[in-house]
Figure 1 (tube, rainbow, N blue to C red):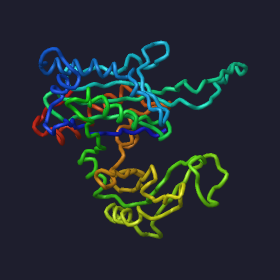
Figure 2 (figure 1 turned 180 degrees about the vertical axis):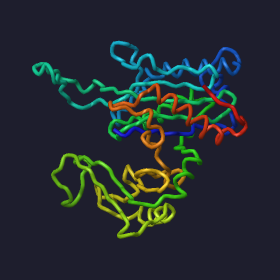
Figure 3 (figure 1 turned 180 degrees about the horizontal axis):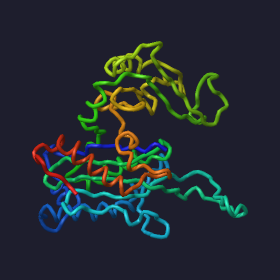
Length: 345
């Protein structure tokens, strides 16, 4: 496992284009009996946010994944770390549950080998995910940080969609917010200034039912495709040069699916692997289609190794501290320069 922080900026949107704050969202998007002050607005959002994990949109039938907060100390190992609100009235953070369903499985005990159990397709296998949500009542822009591991186990996309639906409220005053990838400029600058490119990688998984045409991998039920571009010899292209190459090749035709061209830009994963004298080992950049550039991935092993554990999940108590450090030192000064030296606990 190689856990990472994924950060998103969340900006409220209204149907008439007027700028409204999270306090306004509490009043007009979720509904309050009276005009709330900042604390009342935040408390109301927190209450409705926690309820939303039982809403239909916490389940994605297309990707067959679910978000939930398992309300049981017996089954939820990190129940005591479930999302809670900060005393400052702007942050909701804690461990939620998420995972996949819809696959035929057998649950087997490696100790009591004769105890096997069939897992039905409507049973979710849930893991643990740390989420950090900054929603200042007096402002229209917030921040979300979520931990993720492999693409298969990640519920990041579902959580983004979950936030988009939640912060559209009742749909009368607010529409879906803009939820866009975000990496602090300070982190980008630290690495980009000294980085050289090791390779460009395009990858995706395809299932036979998608109907590849031609004789390419015919007969496979499920398979991965990976296309890699790497410099030859002692060549060490910069990030700028790699981005230029990416823009030249991203629309190159690879194959066909049901008669439609499959281009590199269509691959689900587009990453750039780079080296830097300033940092040990390789670092990964992922393509940000909104900003049209590669942005660095914040792997815990590179930035917050104290949060790592030998187990499947990071040390969530440490993750909480690291999230606050990242937020206070790198994110908040950039998105809220009006707060000057303010910090959150």
